[in-house]
Image 1 (cartoon, rainbow, N blue to C red):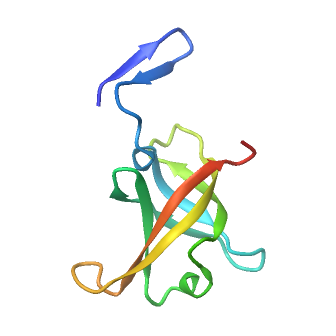
Image 2 (cartoon, helix red, strand yellow):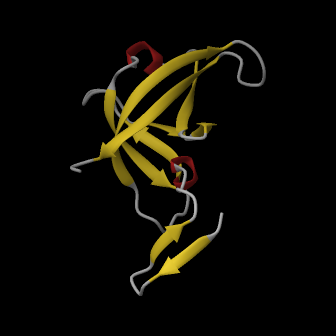
Length: 117
């Protein structure tokens, strides 16, 4: 991807939009105040989508539902970049029946907005 710097403020103009999955390594979220914070690696699942993989025995699966909107902390791919808090909708939860991720669920997510924005 070609990046063109503009101005003295370090703003970037890209010839293609930056894919959200390129910017983040993992997400963290909690389903309630009583439950722990969960952390999962971000996966590239489509040109405009991202997701996480959950083991079929994960306690998160019992509580996560399609349509849920969660505040998630997105940890950057580059450690020098700050983490971001983004409202994220759960779009689908799909069981994987074959291949290296057999016994896992792919959880598709859609970022709705930055927290407070």
